[in-house]
Length: 251
Image (cartoon, rainbow, N blue to C red; front, side, top):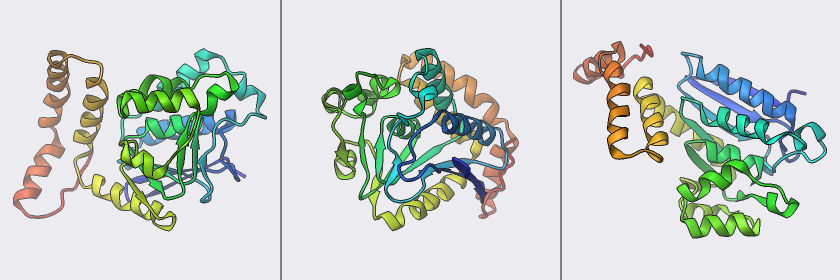
């Protein structure tokens, strides 16, 4: 059985973590995930990625504590893994079903948009084992109020999907049966926009968190200059005046 399922449909890459019953993160799964994201990022036919977990019980309930290779990974390996997760250029949507803990929480935070089922719960229980969640510790307070982030990090407690929505951690909460269909609809809406512009917007948004406005404007100019001269920009303007959907070529 493959630990990860990857399907492509209508310019969307669908990644499903497939280690039931809880889809815990093993070294094999983490490698497969990074390799699949790399392939997706370099596939001109894919504009958006959707990540979910097999079944309704768990998106990813954290690291597989029986996988010694994974649990004894060095801090260098974990930092490199997080760097690769967060270096994906294309938009990523997390469709969070059930438990989203530890390594699963890291994966969801690395996505750009998070949808949650009503049964989803989020947290980082690493501290209960005297370990540290690398990405959550670094990024959570940039995504939600700092005091809320610190309570999650310090207690190791889970928060519900409704609470995650209230504090701005997830974009919306939907019934379990509507989770993946909702992600598909959102992905298709994003696919209607220019892919080059999407990738630039993601890069600007990500890097602006640690940049001054002046540096951000310099980055904006360097990224958007080539895009404004691209075939896709000409196509977008032409399609607008011709009142038809644009045909993007990623050029």
